[in-house]
Length: 306
Image (cartoon, rainbow, N blue to C red; front, side, top):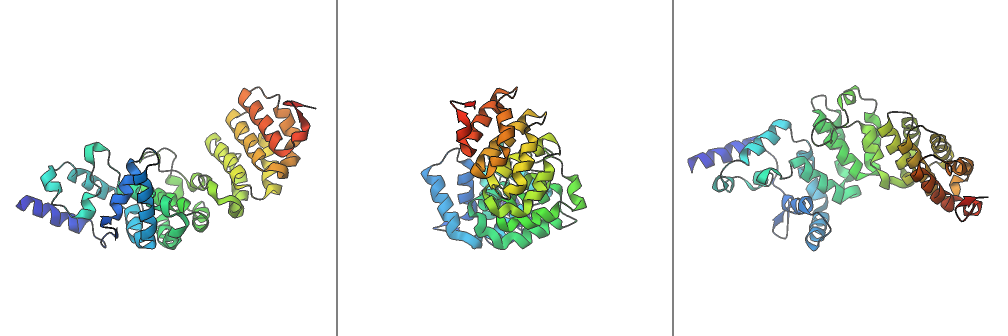
């Protein structure tokens, strides 16, 4: 019993911070764990999302703190998760919420992720603190990446700090696929995740166009997101049309699909899309047909160009 009390005291010192907000008798972390464990939409998941929305900005101090959780804290929580269940029940609630049950419990950063994904734009007041984590010289790559993921979830208000981060020398340490289940990656990749921005992404369009000539993975993602944004067609459409002749088949596929999302605004790309009907890749040919149907269906007759 004494040992459990000592662990609880040590834990309290190692995991400081204000108490978790509650809604209808349940803590924020309990609702977040429901979302983490949901493999498909369920009534429980919908109720959890509504509860998190009701908590609103009251959740932000915890979500920011969990985003900044350091590696030693994560390791400490994993260690505590190996304690006997009676000892775990003695731990403070906000610590017990993150223990690794059967080796597959969410980390504090994963919980924060579901919180920001649910709140989205409502989490805008957290942007200054997330930007602080991102730019802090003492932040680890995983902490920076977690902050960037949160900014990407927030949306328009989180875009400017991500764009600024591209010029930060510390970002050179972020390599795709390094650590924390591929969370660590440069800011360009997080910006490409922000497909819901729509035309609000106009500030990022010139940057995304430059990424079309970068490494294949980033180029393909940039081509994809330019279509979802649908912003600045005078810049985006010609840039995507240039990609239709790329030797990278996946880039060609993404570029053709994105051109179709511009609808009639994509008409300057009709000549290259007609050429793409003869592409050596079956999927590119099919995508070109679909794009032309969205942009200029009159140039097609039963899927064959006039």
